[in-house]
Amino acid sequence: MNMKNRIQTKKVIANTFFTIAVTAIVIFCMFPFLQIISVSLKDVQDMSNPSLIPSKIHLDSYKEILGFKPMNTSQDAAINKILENPNLTDTQREVLFEKYEKKNPFPFPRYMLNSFIVAMAASLFSLTLSVFAAYALARLEFRGQTILKRGTLFVYLLGGVILMVPLYQMGASLGFTKTPAGTFIYIIMIYIMQTLPLALYMLGNYFRGLSRSIEEAALIDGCSRIEIIIKIVVPLSRPVLITVFVYCFIIAWNEYLYASVFLKPFEDLRTLSIALQELFHSKNSIWDRIMAASTLTLTPVILFFFALSKNMVSGLSDGGVKG
Amino acid sequence: MAAGLAKRNEEKMAWILLGPAVIIVGLLIAYPTVLNFVLSFYDVRLDGSKTFVGFENFKNLLTNPDYYLSIWTTVIFLIGSVAGSTLLGLGTALLLNRKFPGQNLVRTLIILPYFAPVISMVFGWQFIFDPVNGIFNFVFADKLHLIRPDTNLIGDPQTSMWVLIAFTTWKYFPITYLLILSRLQLVDKNLYEAAEIDGANVFQRFSRITLPEISFVLGTTILLRLIWNLNRFEDIYLLSPQIKTLSVFTYEQAFTGVIDQGLAAAAAFIQLALAGVGIVYYIKKVLKW
Image 1 (cartoon, rainbow over the protein chains, first blue to last red):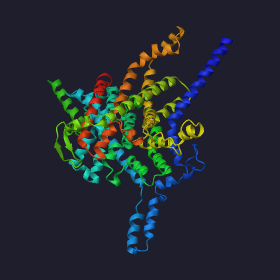
Image 2: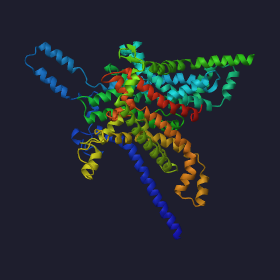
Image 3: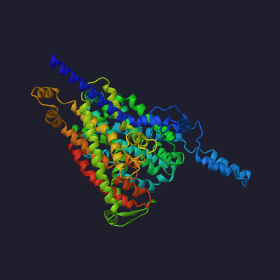
Image 4: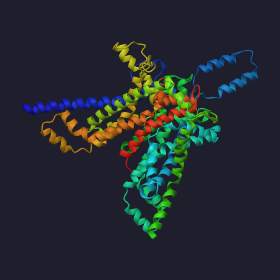
């Protein structure tokens, strides 16, 4: 009886320790997210309140960021002062007014759309190219296979800094970086390059694990390899294709280095990562606005993540890690 | 004869399927890697004009005290961030290697930092350590009086490295945790039962059973983390740009202040050579296709 009690107490202590440790880890992981969301909902006066729960929910920063409410900036005050200058003629005043009034200092929806287009285009291309290439790597025999596989893996482990100078020089000498359209295409190509090795590796491994028997039957029936890929392999691989697509999308959505190298000269092309950094260093930098913009930048990633959480987690152990 | 023909057809098919991907990899990865090497021997201007200067860039680089400082900074960053993410990842994996209520939710939440965009998360971290509004100073200065109220942990070059190490640990331990956990789940449970009957305590069970089983995966995650953190850029530059690791040094040479892209190419080449050794080893020993 005594022995049983001792074991019971030991179990209770172990369970309590376990619960505390797990809670601590989860809080450690979640705290920065909660901090961002909390500040985005706080009023400026409420900022130094250490509680995560705002004393009053304040949505103005979201309205300002999304353009439903004009941003009050220190710039406005300066312009109003200039406009009040009695020496100005009416036409001068009008020109100045036009120039400053029309321009939203931080067109966040535009940046979000840019990020979305770039990430969508890059990941769709990457996925499509890698379905065919990964099939060839997994199923067909050809000379140069080993070099090709190893080369892919080599790049899969490389960071962006290593290729930054040559890619910049190539973009400049080929004329891509001179025009907005060229720059936009070039950055999408760079994101394809960044996501392709990961997609190739994950899909290649997955295709190798698929049973060959259906494909062999189809070959005997006279199907071509391309028909096999489209009609058999792709439908069988739908979950992994979605996972790979989301990984690629997130890599491109989060990317900062190349965006800062290529997109800074073109204000209309900026993606969220550089736009947020600009906002932070600009006169419009107020914590609640920054956090509202950060929350909106996080949202698609979190939505994808929870919608597909099971695949997202298991895919990482199958090679979906980049960085 | 027919078999040879089939084989040749197969090879042709393979190249058709591979073509677009190979072109992208060749033009945007293989060629730039070679070009980077070539450019490191030139004086390169932003507009694309260049003059051959031989080993000048390497000479300038290796006589630049800032370069050695950045190597030293990188070493400290690597030791701290790799140790942090490995220890926390290992601890978490050992802790969570059992069934418990809510396990799916917990496992999902732990992975989230890895996917979150760096640009958003650095603001969260900067706010936590903000001298005026941050919770860190509120707790440690205002309440516990352990640090001075004007402490600026991220802004102060003396302490910003600690925050950076904490940040990269937070962001990348989920990967280590996940890879170790998936290996732990393959370990035969009977081994532990047998050891327990033989009277082995927790530490003996860890060092005699768990550690040998996971040592390979542990070694490879450490190697991977070293390679990736060596090439890490945005986490450092966006959280605390005054920390000049090799990647930040190279970026600043290439695009800010007095621009010297040839020097940056030389620095990138040396970094590639350093990472390359680890990468080649990793590909040959670990990754399987």
